[in-house]
Image 1 (cartoon, helix red, strand yellow):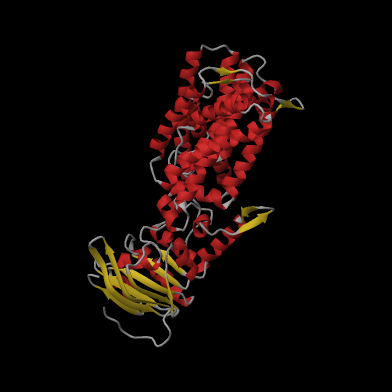
Image 2 (cartoon, each protein chain N blue to C red):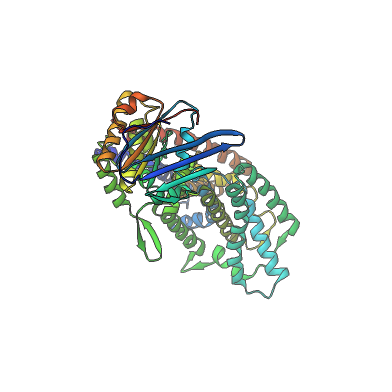
Length: 323
Length: 229
């Protein structure tokens, strides 16, 4: 491949970062106090709970599946662990709650994984049912807010180490782990393979059932961590936690170039999608934009992202096409 | 069932009196045949004659209802694709079991990629996969610019080449090609016929399933004709 083509390809592959840079420059020039290190760190901090939902959705989409229940999983996990620590077993040390968050999230995800993987039911239908069940289970457990949350549950989502929010370390660490998992392990290649062509993957001896089960379980664990970070960010556990965030999770993954058809996309791209949403969100907050208008803007940005990604894919094809 | 030119050695694989029913429909009725080492056998039959069923039984996708399969003289039961692969039976499917959005290298090694240990974690050895794939591609005269090329940009013949490289790399003893020329243009057909000759040079036996006698005529050592099970 000629060198200039390689550069073009890299630019196309990482288009999301160019867009981020562009939006960032515009905001820095027009909004006072936007361009400060403190503000940048705060943007990442505020976006990190949603980030784990974006990652969970990205993994599900890469494998050719989808998971509608992730945000409600995060909400139910947070509420259930909160109720366990506050009402049912107050003698439990707080740090157990952190482990419980991950485990409960993974377990709820495994329910989806069982039905999609072993029973071969359409992921849209299964996660739609669990979305409704998880959502109302949260309200059944507690309608309102748990205010007295054990400190240990707030450390990762709300605490700071050396002046930097802990959740930033958590999200950066997870991006690294997921990058290795998806790009450099057999398991990751199997996820992309079944996303690309699940029938052919089966013929090549890959257990589509098992991979599907684990994908939903891992996505569920991501939702559990997301719940944990939301609790730390909000310093309480309301029953509306992460409500409706699933649409933003899809939006982030898709803006980051993860394809709905499966097999294409990367976790770094998904991170890009998240950061772009975070920057725009911060810009709206700092200019005190009308909340309803912000919602409209979010939808509009997603639409633009879809159009840009379509162009990006065809540009990529044109560069990669053998001559 | 009709055979010509019988080899005297021990057959690599021998199927004896194989029966297969799908519910009440009888797909195979007492099939017997054998394949000798480094032999190209053309398995010919009309559509619906049971060719696909027979090869699915050999490649571990379906299980026989009755009858015996001998591998190098010993009776074996093939319950899964993995077991068939462990014996050394590799299948190249009609619909080209390739994953379009992944690279040629990933496709050749999918399911059995070489790994390097990184402490407890096993990391894909991508450079080895790339090197080996490029060697295989050169060997089979596949015209791909690099092993990183995504398979969806490959022609039909080249896709079959990717599937056949799997068999070559993993040292298969028997390659089953299920209608490998059906969906191809003439240039693609010639390519596939060349691949089969290459397999023979590597002393790999193959079963070439087809309903087109002309395609198989130039490469096969022997024919097995299947008529209505």
